[in-house]
Image (cartoon, rainbow, N blue to C red; front, side):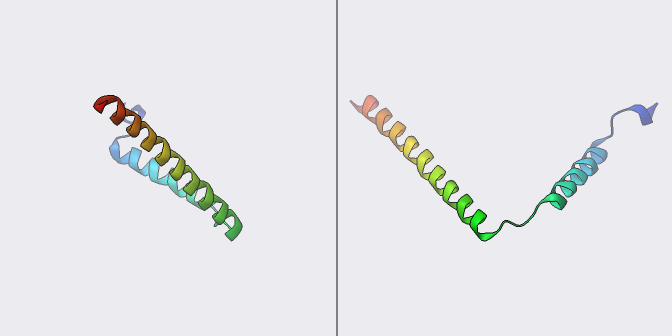
Length: 66
């Protein structure tokens, strides 16, 4: 009966590590153009999110302090 039950914590960890290994085997190193494009998108996203957060904070401070 015990073999029909779900695997324990050790079995789950082994299964997760096996899945991660399969994912890592499929990855490839990006070329320089792909890396630069990804970096540009990342920085633009960081700037956009930071700007929106700053504007929200500015509006909130103005509403609270009057």
